[in-house]
Image (cartoon, rainbow, N blue to C red; front, side, top):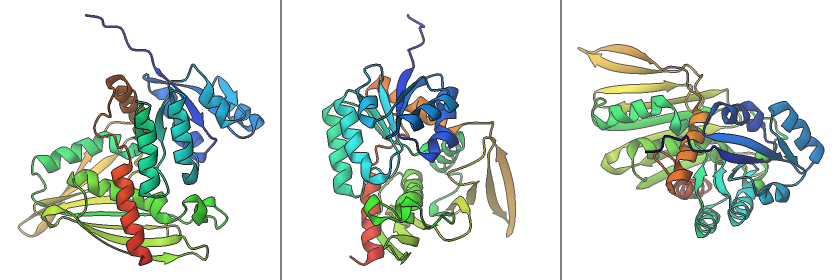
Length: 328
């Protein structure tokens, strides 16, 4: 039996987005299963500067050039939301697998078109919900499966921070708004921890002058009357926390979807009416690097490996929440 290590999946980064410097470039270097080979910008000078800073060998002055590079196996797409469908499909047609930032598209119809376009080329599509791949998420899912929380009753998430009012995420034509940028995480968490899709949705929002949602709250009901209470905001203080509550115990994930490398969970049980807490510590883990590991495994297997997300189901819930919040 061969013990040869498979070659790394060679990635091109389609755009110089903030998250590339903040997390993606480091994760590409940390994961032995991938290699960051190229980066593209609409400006060759920008691409070259980023490539030098981030130790990426190739730089392109257009997205078309990167997608056409025959040495690339996959692309990572951190572009603004309105460009996801176009470039995911173009990349797949050029023979590349696709790791695409969330949300997958501007609506469920566009997301289905994206998914269908990539599937027609027989390529892997994965939505970049990096938080799903952290070891503590596996641990909590096992707690739920083993009944250690009792019967699941509530999933709560708050996610907010104040953004500059000139940010593109306040432009409705570009898929702006707190729901698409932040609320998508709460929906994703509720769907993952319940293992199902919501059967009832209620949502309300406060809008910016541009028409996008600045603050949004939603309630999702899942089978067995499990409720998800989720909120997101571009105008409130920084908050990022997930809590899962059962009839026997609750578990909090401090830092929500952006935990530190050495993270914890806090389990609370009630004994004779007295709350007792236990903190479980996890070894250092880069969830972005683990996301690339799962992506590489999926490419080699020819199918998405759990808990990877292809994005279409999440986009359908986003669509329904938006319609509720807008009263459409």
